[in-house]
Image 1 (tube, rainbow, N blue to C red):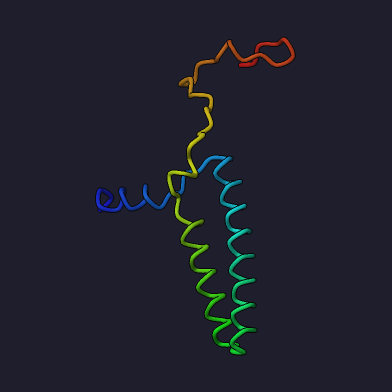
Image 2 (cartoon, rainbow, N blue to C red):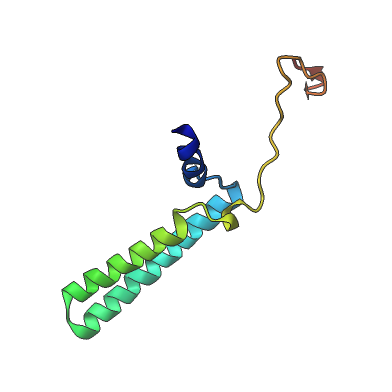
Length: 101
């Protein structure tokens, strides 16, 4: 069963980097403002509150589709983390001139 669920879990895990997080936040803010303004204008023009709500909902769903999945554009600059030393001290790490183990 784990063999069947592993690809789905990898797809939904959501690996994005810090630049991708900034981009996703910027996109969500801009798209929600645009969809809100568009729904307001459309609703005012047609004098229909239902059309306003449906336009706002469509904009919100579009924003979620753009921002929520971990698209590859959100992971272009992955961070390089320190690797595992297998329990051995790493003498290359120094803090204030003192080797840290």
